[in-house]
Length: 230
Image 1: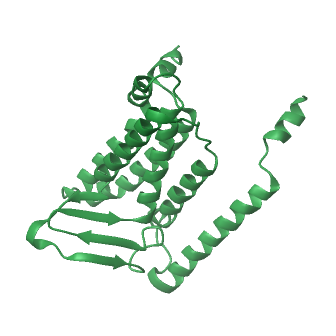
Image 2: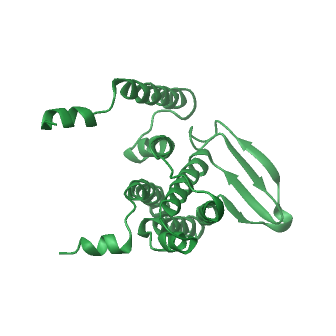
Image 3: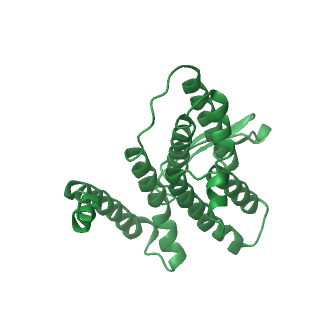
């Protein structure tokens, strides 16, 4: 196959380009309408980033789902992979503030937030309970589900025994990044730090999310990274 033919073969199909163009145009229209009718035009680059950030999470999550073919596994290994992926989602949910400990007597129950916050953050279903708190923010829930999906594929793709699948998860460098970022952004957002630190948490969590999705598609391990050393 010639070089030109190989390049053409790697190009996205016209149907795919039209598909994503339609999605991005629809999202842009939603953001424009929200800015005109609710919040007003963003007055800074940070404002533009806040409006675009949840769509980046949602689009990348959908891209990862559509472009990841999970290996077929059965039996015990499938159960272990599903259990570990589910556990990983719960860890991300706790680290990222989707699930939190309850607030006792201050609990207020369910609340649906719609136009008060930008699309992608909303519609958000919030539950404040005595024993636990749930913040179902669309971009976070979808993003964490996408990461769990990729982690399931990472574990299932490891040939051999269940033990090999466990080793594959714990040697996956990229799997740890969003957990660390979630903890950092939750701490800085709740500890009364300066406003500039809270603003940077969005950039940190988004950068880590994008890097993690791409790395889980590549699936590097500690051994892979060691081979990159000069």
